[in-house]
Image 1 (cartoon, helix red, strand yellow):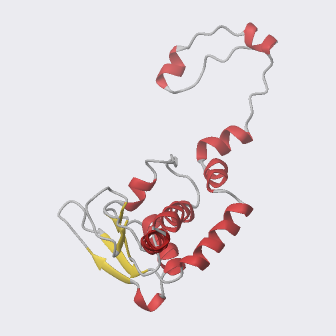
Image 2 (image 1 turned 180 degrees about the horizontal axis):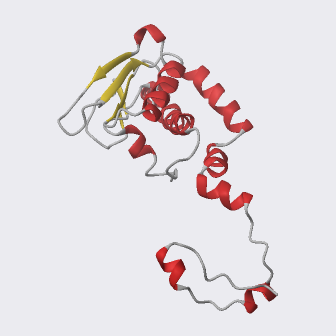
Image 3 (image 1 turned 30 degrees about the vertical axis):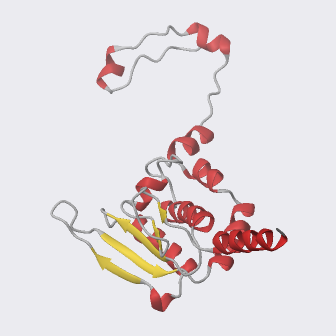
Length: 195
């Protein structure tokens, strides 16, 4: 009985240390890859909303990818990142992620153009620096969380913070809650006096 118990513990430790199959898209894969393709940033931002025109998108996308990879993947797995658009935000994010997790000499960029997406590409590299990436990510999150980065850098949050509504309740009661013809046409008008 004790020998069986020791063997079960050893087997559970051995299997818990092994890398598991990881696919962000939920595709069938094996345990040799950490597959964030296809559409890496699109899939990552389905879980956390990042408004369009948010400043520093590359850094935010990189943080989201690193959060996923450092919790789901292991050293030795082949990291795969993919974009259809091939824009500078995706390129910058993929550079940050791959340089954080892989040896620079091992990073391979492969064009994957289609008729609809001629700038499509993917990045492949073997994850070698997982522990250091986890430590740097934890330090960066302690300094400024990803959620805080999104909140402070998004255009609609920053503009609302810069121009707070300073009208009082009494001022609002003086103005009717109607819209003018000029406002409908987008040329202004309809302002009421606050006398």
